[in-house]
Length: 159
Ligand code: ADP
Image (cartoon, rainbow, N blue to C red; front, side, top):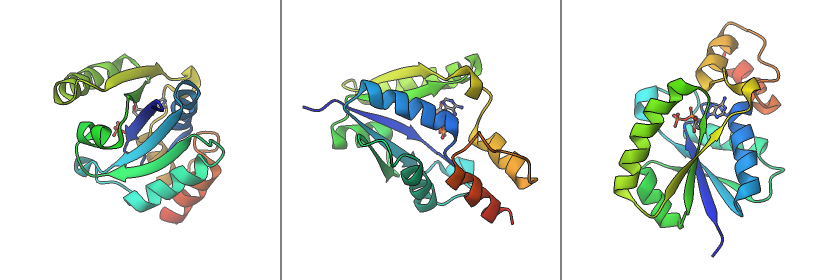
């Protein structure tokens, strides 16, 4: 059976920090599915469809990576698609507590799926979708932080 990992997230929008984790994950696993989860509490800027399109465009050069979306529980979704693992990125110690809580809950829900953490490249450790959106809203320079398609999409949103 092919070893499949999920990179779940809001990706509102995808940043170079996400791409760093996804591309490194794709070197470890035979197949990676990047799944957009609609987190209602976050009132997103981009629709799920828009977020998927931006991910697809940004990941088109990675042949073993595909993009999907789901509105259910991550661990039910993992079972459905036969995933071996979930990959999450860690930027700083501040991410740790939140991630530990979700991981223990997820483990209770599905013991067959392991959660693996990858530390971000330090150049992205300050980078988040929210920071990028905030900067883009005031026409700040976000080049080098997001893929070109995302930079364009943000310009359109805040025109
Ligand atoms: P969520 O709403 O699930 O936190 P995000 O889209 O913010 O979704 O993040 C998705 C995944 O990418 C998470 O594992 C997060 O820790 C990771 N991530 C976010 N930003 C970065 C970054 N700059 N470097 C590395 N990983 C990141």
